[in-house]
Length: 167
Image (tube, rainbow, N blue to C red):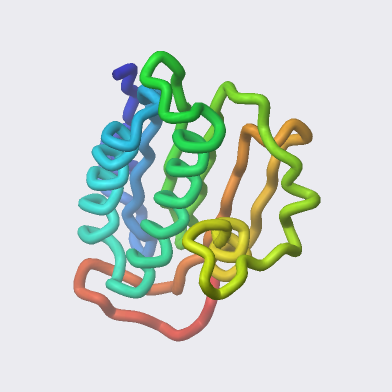
């Protein structure tokens, strides 16, 4: 697995984070297009989130990462271990950025954007999940790259102190 991880903000600047600023992290990975590799990355992301976010924020963040990675692996790359999926996950200043790209042919996200899965369907809820949990979602024209932004509650810390104001 090709791996690049940025150091926490305090390490990058050579000192502690500025007073009042929230800790953050960034993960950049290129993984084989397998569900196992995606699960490993999601587990690592989840460990980072649990150290920095309250349970509710961590759940929404993990759900978005899981949806984006699973779609890239299963639909974009057809779970072909010979293909790769690129991912950048950044949590900084109350904002989570998820960027995922596969090398598949993409999909018509415009046609899928307003669709809803029928209640008995076992799949087809990905766009609904993104609409519900993300602050913004941007696909490239081809539909094989997505950037998802999720604004998190201000004041969320390891101790779980939450101010109810959205950032």
